[in-house]
View (cartoon, one colour):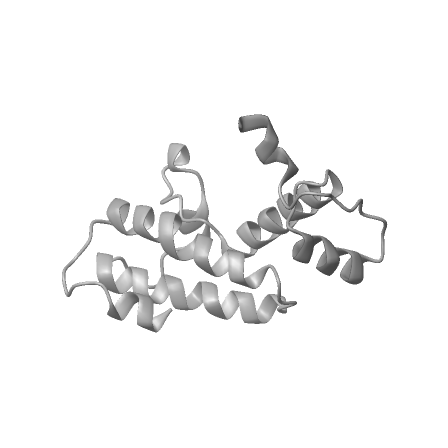
Amino acid sequence: IDSYFSSLPNMLFSPKEAVRLINSQLIPKLAYRMTVHCLSFEVVDLFQKGIWYHMSRISKLPKITPTKARYGPVKEGALGLFELNTRIATLTLTQFQRARHGESPQMVTKLLKQALDIPIPESESMYSIAKCYV
């Protein structure tokens, strides 16, 4: 997280720009990598706090902004920042659903079979869903 924010130019972002940058680039990268690791809630929470620390620094928001104001919906006046633990859970569920329908890479299917100890069908092609678009 530190290296991600240190790669940004030394300029201020508006809160909306900072949220868009974090939600579209940093959170998806972290969540994707964290789906293959069994991290405790405390570890994920530390990552989330690190993201907020750096975001508040580049957007000049107070570090003591309430959690509800950080992660709530924009329609309700919050910033709309994605929660890392929610994104990890969503991505894990998506991968599981793809594996159950034979639309997941073989490696992901094997990992899910081992981790969950449930029957998941093997697919002949790595991405059977791709056949729908060809």
